[in-house]
Amino acid sequence: MTDPTHTPYDGSSKPFAIGLKQAEPRDWIELDGHLDAYLAEKDRLYAEIPDKVFVAEPGTKQSQREVLDLLVAHLTERFPETYRVEEGRCSIAGTGRSIDVQNPGDSPLVAASKLVQEDLILMRRGDDGWRLAAGSLCFPSSWRLTEKFGQPIDKIHGPVPDFGPGTRMAELIARMFDKLTVLVERFNWSIQADGSLYHPLSDRQRLARSAETESTFPGADVAAHAFIRVERQTLRKLPVSGDILFTIRIHLDPLAVLARHDERARLAASFADQLMSLDRQQLDYKGLVADRDRLVGFLSEMKKAG
Image 1 (cartoon, helix red, strand yellow):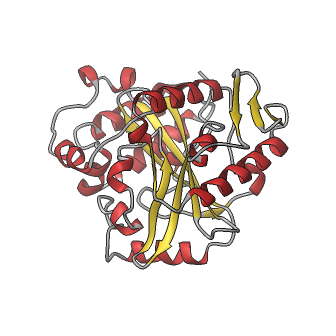
Image 2 (image 1 turned 90 degrees about the horizontal axis):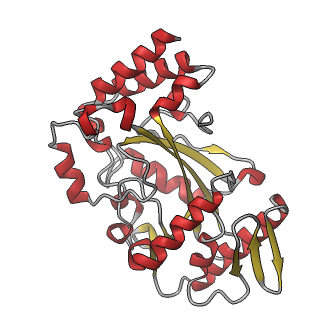
């Protein structure tokens, strides 16, 4: 196990805050040694449940194509040792994959998604605000693409405490989208009971989960079964279409990996503080009502061990 790439639970990214900051264009896409495994999982999901991991409104093909072209240009410049385009196909070193980027068919966003570990969501401005107009979402963090498809952003965030329609946060996000001019990023974290990248949850399932009082971890053993799920999200306005591309990169690490970190005591203390700061509604949303105290106890022991 290696150290986590990002640790937003150290207090640098407060839960249930917008937390956008400008990002360097060269850091738009993240690449690591798990690329082949992520792409293999995407291939499996596209083969088995294509309608659940890709959606698109009519009239978005040109915008999807814009995303594909931007990605190919970025990847071949930023990671030339991994990505190379020849005769209209982009080959990905070390994976045996070659994606047709010249003639990607009716769904260029699918071709784009098969190049990277990130999921790709297109937001389009309409009379009711920014809505989810197209998306490739193979690695959802407790939501379903088909439920959110076509919805404006305030309704998409409806289940999120203080982010639903009519809230101040929803208004701030809408204004930020309208005024977006540079690449921005934000981080979010959650905890799950296994290492699955595909982790969907319907709004109905979320409500049912919030009423649960038993541990979600087998044997209530957080040390053995808890995984930290970190999302790195970026937003950029597409120069031609004016749509906004939302990327989501998932990082999964066993909770126990923190015990090997050089700053384990600090990280464990700040992570426990973040968990303790969550109110009941926020704990419900993250599915941690039954397990928050167990997690805090585990982190507290890690802090003591220093």
